[in-house]
Image (tube, rainbow, N blue to C red; front, side, top):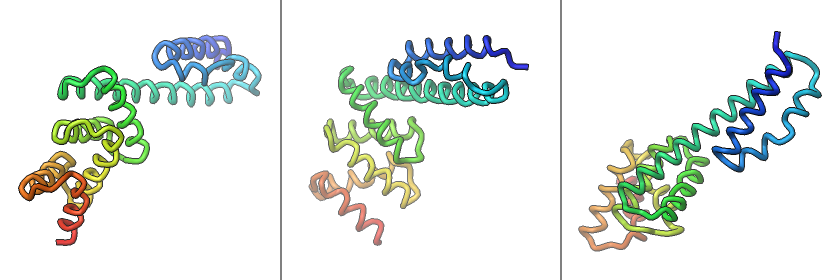
Length: 172
């Protein structure tokens, strides 16, 4: 049988950990104990607890993966803390629209940065173009980016022409 007080205490512990780890997640857990205590019974409390703990665990894992990628980005590129934060926001935004892992997205964005420099707001679009091309051609993103980049360099074409080159490769 589920002890309601233990569940409430566990949820409070998760809330405290969320506030310390993610800041923003803490608000999502406010007044959780009151909500849980008002629910119908132990089965409902158990199901809600499992769902919340699962969501919190996934959230913490995602935060950790993004932080790991931010660290790898700084090491690989010599980026500042502010640049790493922008990188983190870029990979989080890209993760929402891609099935790729944070690690794969982070590697792609890092490779684009190393090859083409800081593209600012264009970083996400350029990286996404290379990721899409890689999927269509069955390559990993870094290899796809390197092959297109080599063509751009050989013909003295600007990065803006990358999508044209990729379209021609796909049509061939």
